[in-house]
Amino acid sequence: MADSQQPLRIGFVPEHFSTPIHFAKKHFGLSAALIPFPSGTGHMITALRGGEIDVGIGLTEAWVAGLGKEDTPDDGGYRILGTYVETPLCWAISTGAERPDISSVSSLKNSKIGISRLGSGSQVMGYVLADEQGWLTPSSSPYADFVILQTFDKLRNAVNDGTADFFMWEHFTSKRYYDSGEIRKVGQIYTPWSSWKIVASTSSTQLNNDARLKDLFEKLDQGTKYFLGHPDEAVKYISTELDYSEEDAREWLKTVKFADNVAGVDTKVIEGCISSLQKAGVLKEGKGLQAQQMLV
Image 1: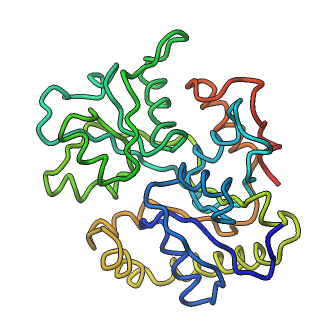
Image 2: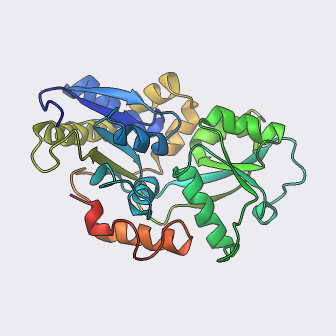
Image 3: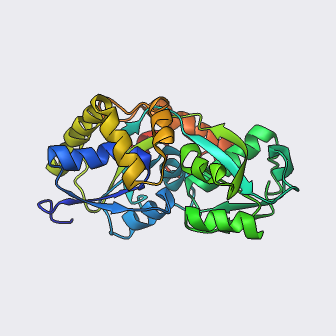
């Protein structure tokens, strides 16, 4: 067990959704080391299991997939114990600017999908898209290949040089590159669940009795309340410190709802996510951890 007197090491994705975390540290004295993971939630799962971070704030589907797979190592390495964002995530479906062969979502069947990492939201949502489109069969993959590319920058390059045919990433993060003409939007898909959850390591935190986690939840609640009350400061931070225009930041504010109280998780949300991932072929029924086992 790690020293509970040490500040938490918190992994997060350095995108617009991280703004309340920034406010929690800046305005309310959150005592933690904030460690950015631009490659996303799948990378945080590896870091949690490797003892590199204590807490991760990332995408629901990736956390659930990480614990629900039949080859999940040991106890899975983490548990889901908080809700960060209540609204679904809009995943934009993108291809290269000069890819006339890709004209619609239907043309993506049996193509090469770019993903950040195995087990990432970008891979999981590829299966959810395939399920929605009716491409899933028991005997074959809906895609010719899953091309692992780590970062958003490499994903954009890959669809332009032909390494991948398309990828999926959050809409507003992608929009700047539609506007510049670097990539082209083919479609979009929403998660059928609330989009962001908070997890903690089973080896470096005392999940039910760690004062650092209680402090984190209190400070995140304060950071979220501040975020809601100071939209202009939020927009300024997002448009100057992160990769978004002021206009896009303001539009995004209209679409997102953060949890009023981050502590706790609705078991039904996790059960619904598991059900969707089983239907999509990401998880197998009766294998891996079940919903209640994923929670504290």
